[in-house]
Length: 196
Image (cartoon, rainbow, N blue to C red):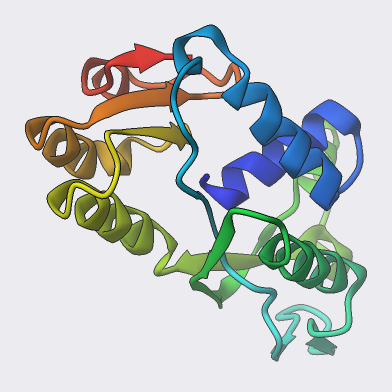
């Protein structure tokens, strides 16, 4: 499971930050789908980056912002900790880096409707996830090459996984793709066996 993608889709569905029950419920719903009947679960891998625990300086106000104690950071860390304790779950952690600051969606819409000078509240931190996609690709390769599993369900909309998907299929692994209704590039569909 691409954790960032899963959290985004669950947030849209529930209109709040997802809980461990939302994630495990989603897993149960996916496993109950007809094409997966008769398959035995090996493990659920959840890939995400823990919260950014340092500070950054808003370039307009010059105010130092400590991100480690924000409600979002606490929610994200609690979700990862709760998932680690679930049966048959493995949480794989990448990292987050502050890539700078960008216009928030609300500010962008407001500025498009009525141009005005920027203010500090218009900017939001631009976090970049590091190492998550690499861990997903490596685990797909490891599970395939060692023949640990016969099939995999990949929950994502990210076409960066196509090389790993190709490898898995070349190794004889049945590959199922769950996009949670999100539109994806054709190439992602081409390199899967069944789209759930």
